[in-house]
Image (tube, rainbow, N blue to C red; front, side, top):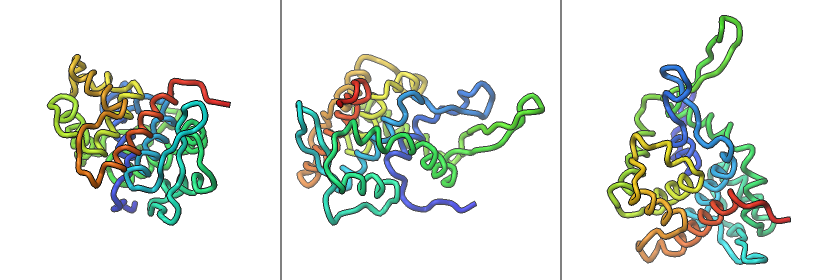
Length: 234
């Protein structure tokens, strides 16, 4: 099997964090948290990644909504990000529309990438000596633990909020999955308050050169969180 060497996307990092080792009822097997709203969360990560790379910009839509448009002549190299960028290049669209369009097909290719990187292990097993099933396990390369350390540093230690980690935490908080990390990240009042700040786009001060990117990405994260709990506009 070929090992992926390209830098992981934000959506890959998010899916890896949502993977819960040893949660599948048997030792060495895991499940993915937040499956019911996963397509919203992963699509939000794709949009946020496009924002971090200055591939999209946001603007005001009808009724106070947020619209996203592609920055022409600045496509991303990654094929998953490029597909979303191409969709937006046709015309600006509301965030909820984008989530519904790109989200449902993201889980499988992103999971394949994590397996190719060795972050997650996929293996076939036989249940009851009859039924073939596929289980997921920790890849053992330590990348999930490192990502979790970054999230913990921000939420527990109050570390500086770098845009990429801030986006990850905001999306995790908005997905409602952060309480499932209580063993690694104590679910305390200060942690909850910091998570809500990041969810709402309050990322703190940063380098002036990053101000526009930070604002665009924070707006996307905040809008994605709202879109995940609101009915779509018609």
